[in-house]
Image (cartoon, rainbow over all chains, first blue to last red; front, top):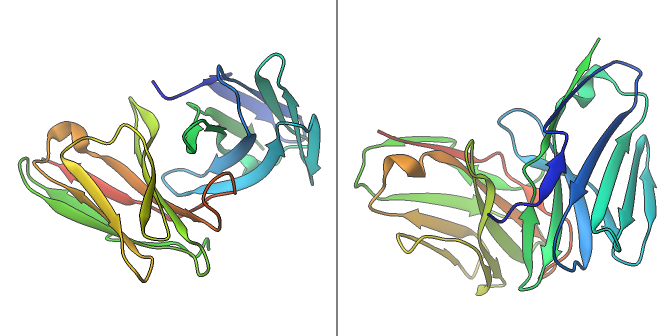
Length: 110
Length: 113
């Protein structure tokens, strides 16, 4: 499979709570990206973190990257019902392939 | 709106047939990527073109082929279709040859009956 490991597979939280999604991978990467997909629609790029960066913020999003553990996490703070979607990490692998994980389905209940 | 246009939005066809999916990238983007998304396989990278040349190849079946034209639009051809080819096919584009964020179209939903 081309996919990395993401956990949890699904997450259900109340509006206002924080949501954390994790992504692990096995090969060396140049960068790691996070995307959101609303049901049946195209993916939307959220944030990109380079291999020499450890943390990056964008609005309510915080991404961390630990290259020694080959893992990344996406934190969404103060979640809203509109954040309900699937979230995918994607890593740029050797051969210029951007490989997506299996995704985490996030449901935010209002 | 990502600026990436995919046509058609839906396609229903029979096994053994051939179809062509079309993609117009976002203005200024030189790279086009094709992905297949299904429930059991997730989002699978098929192929990437950069400025008309094949740049990277994923697990694209021999029955599938793609090309990028001089005006940078791309077509994905799927032939000898099987039931298992039913999926959402996404096109994405990016400015550079690799590593930059992708902008996705809304996909073509292919149903093979």
